[in-house]
Image 1 (cartoon, rainbow, N blue to C red):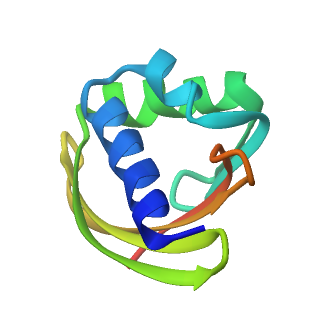
Image 2: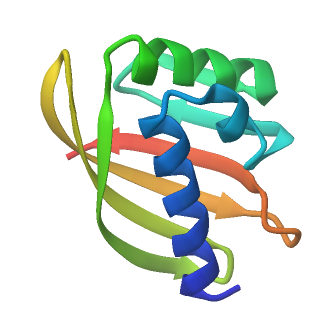
Amino acid sequence: MSNTILRAKADALIAATNAFDADAAVTLFTPDAIIDDPSTGHRFDGHAGIRDYIDRYFAGYRTVTRFLSIESLGEARARVRVDFTGDFGHEIGLLDISISADGLITRIDADLE
């Protein structure tokens, strides 16, 4: 899988979260996908968990995400560095994104720099 595909998936996720559109975000993930985000103290499982994550931490804090860079971590993985701003202030984040063969996100390991 090319960095172009991984970048397109990251861009689609950023667009959905910036629009606070949990429905659009969920369509980017496999049904059993996981978002593990230690900065929130939680792991979010499946579409219901991902919807909760978007609603709580993006819509709830009016988070706006800006793409900074992407680094390949293997065939179907990339580390995306992003800039977050919102009601909480400002943070730089890292999203390690894994993609299935059919182009859906299977896992995101999120962290703050």
